[in-house]
Length: 82
Ligand SMILES: [Zn+2]
Image (cartoon, rainbow, N blue to C red; front, side, top):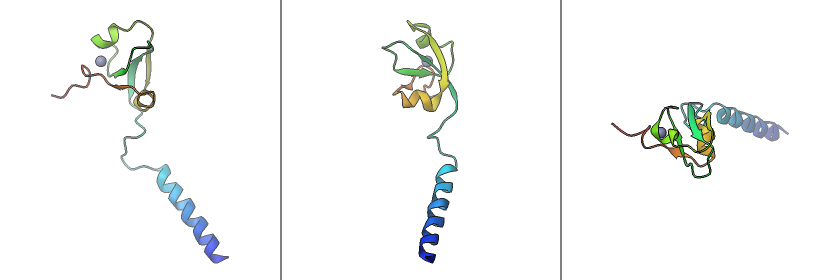
């Protein structure tokens, strides 16, 4: 019986670790802008980006993790490296 309790405790501790990620970027709450048009595949850092102005449909403010979950990739104009 003691073994079972030990195993359950391990499982609970394991879940606690999963629930508290230290510095991971898998759930990024940064706000980004996406276009709801069917051809849009990018997300933008600002709502004034030239790539977003071309949007044929609505602009939408979402979290970065949501945008990435929808298969969006960072806009090259907003996220270009310096
Ligand atoms: Zn952009």
